[in-house]
Amino acid sequence: MPAPVPYFQVVREMKNAFNYRLCLVTHARQHGIKAAARAFRTTLRTARKWLRRYQSQGLTGLQELSRAPRSCPHKVGGELAQKVVELRRQLPTFLAPSVSSASGISRSATWPSNAFCVSTA
Image (cartoon, rainbow, N blue to C red; front, side, top):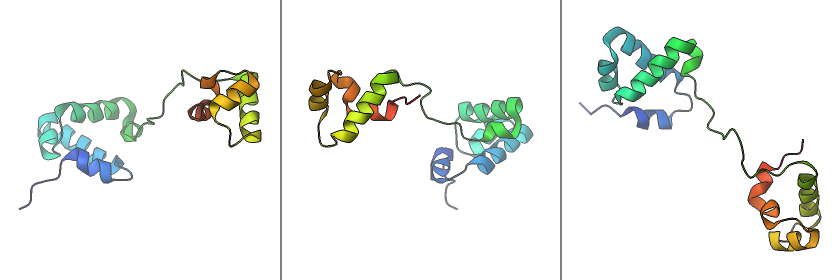
């Protein structure tokens, strides 16, 4: 008989691991956390995490949480953001140093990676 596949390997390949987590929690409630961790080949910490989420939030606690950052510390906002966006549209082939020297805006504000953190509000 082949060895069971570890929890993290199974979950990583799933699009939605909700049902698998529900099975883990159900097993933990019936047989205990150690037995569930052993059966699903995961750590006690992971089994406890999902059981606690289920106990505190119900079925919604078993869904995947967003991994997106809650803030962007180098975010550029307001008029400066609008100016950078407009300059980058007008001069798409210019690099950050060129846009920076042409506009008087710091290089870090004009760098392409900051385009994802620009606040247009």
